[in-house]
Length: 416
Image (tube, rainbow, N blue to C red; front, side, top):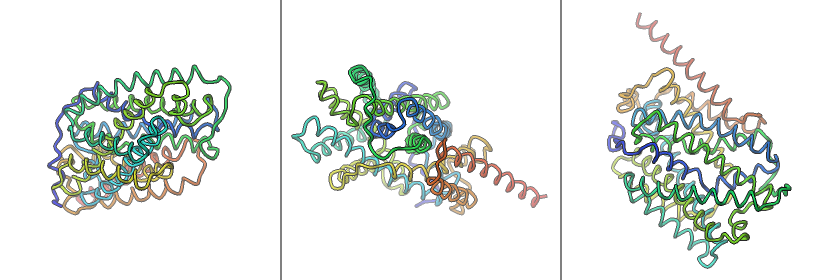
């Protein structure tokens, strides 16, 4: 791998704010987010909704930070990581990102195929996984310019379908709570953390897409609001299903009220509009690791691997996976945001050609990240009312600011 990072990934400013908003609303509408909302049923409607909103506010702070930093510099999330952690240091996050995005691709295809099979069982799980995987490959193969237009149309249609589905669920269901828990009872703090972890899982993807935005500041805000609001909406649908509809399966509920076709459209489009982002971003990260691989080709390969995993080893439980993602990327994002947006240690020139590329690692930031990772993992055993991400984020952000102030002071003393 060459020391000059990612020159083949120079961005083109092609996405308007409307396209950015529709792309990120399409990302928010997913069966995984609806299913996660059902886990909050033991808290009841008011507490469950409060946990959803608080968690998303926390997670979306880092989502906005990574989005704005990438949009302003025109660099991908992994290039931002290279500026803060060194080219070789950023490989840790690039590899982790490829693995987690392929994992998400498999999880999303599995959940989409399982839901579609309820409505049209003739295809079977493998058949639906093949169909969804093929559509995702087509979405990735279209490329950003064409995909932006297609995704906008699909997301707009999905928005209308989601309104109809929400209306049916919340108006035709019983007004009395019939709690259907999707697992063990959850504490308020754990629910907040689970809600915060969902935006965190999108941090690298946010940077990869916002770097192509025409208006960095407003585009970052648009992406954050549309994703955050859309994700809260999906969580609320899941919570409502478990509390009022007496089911944690949205496809079964829609089928019972005669909305099988609408349900199928929601399943297919929500799976594709969400999962292609994962596959394409995996391609971008793979190209950052090995520049001879075209990002689009790597994205198609990632989609195919995810599809094969969905067929061969379908996974239904993903909460531990979400927490692992949070423990890796929350400290990383906190450090990058402090570097870029607070102490301005890394300029746009540094992102293009990081000074730390000479040594390969920024030891100070790598140590800070490792401390954040360990702190996050340890804190998962604590019941913190505001979840784990917020305190870890504040501690690591402050530690990063303080460590660099001390380092700069020592450098000035040495130079004097």
